[in-house]
Length: 99
Image (cartoon, rainbow, N blue to C red):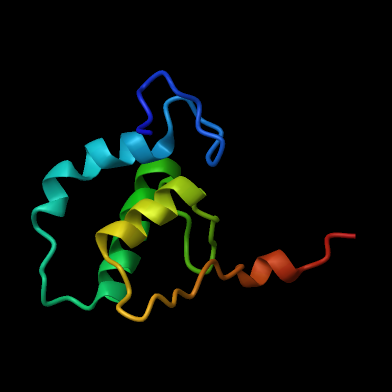
């Protein structure tokens, strides 16, 4: 079942779903993906494009977790041949106890 612009996404919690908006933003760039770029590099670049578009520049070492719907979409576009993915790595500041 495909989401429409009026569907609320249970992964990102947005209406419209971030994946739908991201697909529209990327439509032109997807044609420019170089098939010679390793999949992990292509995924990293696509994650970066998503974060810049939705959150702006975060700064070095600051990370946000990408919604499952967007993560799965990027993995569909640039699958790892072995099916192994790194997943989200928390930033160093996530480990600091604020108490």
